[in-house]
Length: 141
Length: 118
Image 1 (cartoon, chains in turn blue, brown):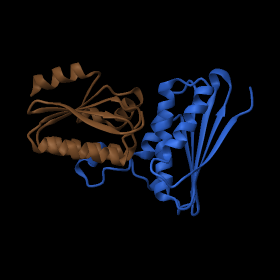
Image 2 (cartoon, helix red, strand yellow; image 1 turned 90 degrees about the vertical axis):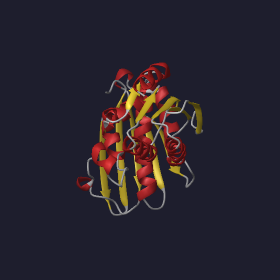
Image 3 (cartoon, chains in turn red, orange; image 1 turned 180 degrees about the horizontal axis):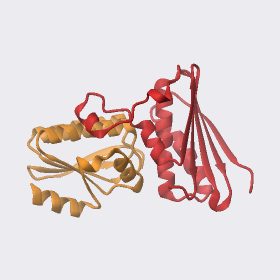
């Protein structure tokens, strides 16, 4: 097993900044031999994590993409950190389409999508520091 | 593939197709919503959104597509999507979108089905 590959980014305050993180995922994922479709799922999840951080955080949003090479067992790990007020994960409601269709608020899918698209999602949040850790194995679901 | 473009490519009265290219973010979603509402106001009741050239979407864009879906259903119409990338298809499946919208593998199948029903 060789050393992990790391890319660290501070997202600029520009339109579609989240796509910079997606590009880093693409670059490292290809080096690890991830399938295109798997990488696109990771990119969707990373875009959601970045959007949440850009929207709810304050100050800079940091993204670290780490490729852990290990043949078929290779892993992509993405850490998205913001310095906003934080949130209580237990209070984030699970979205239901029927309710969304008839309600005023159609948003609120980000965390749910991340959980289904990635193999693992961990969130650490307290005032001034929120970090979302996303993990996908090369042969993951 | 990330620059957004929207092109209405066909409309025969009650059925219309919107061809989407690139990243569906807030601006892309708003553009789709505006055009869809215009078509629905003109009497379109079967609306097909072709995502052949779209590989990435975010949840803000999705929420705007839900507004289009709600509007279409309120008018008794049908909203269809075709040519979804596997990751977007999985996203729609996670949301349960197939309960309310029609998902088709390709445009030919979609048009055949939507014309048969309209």
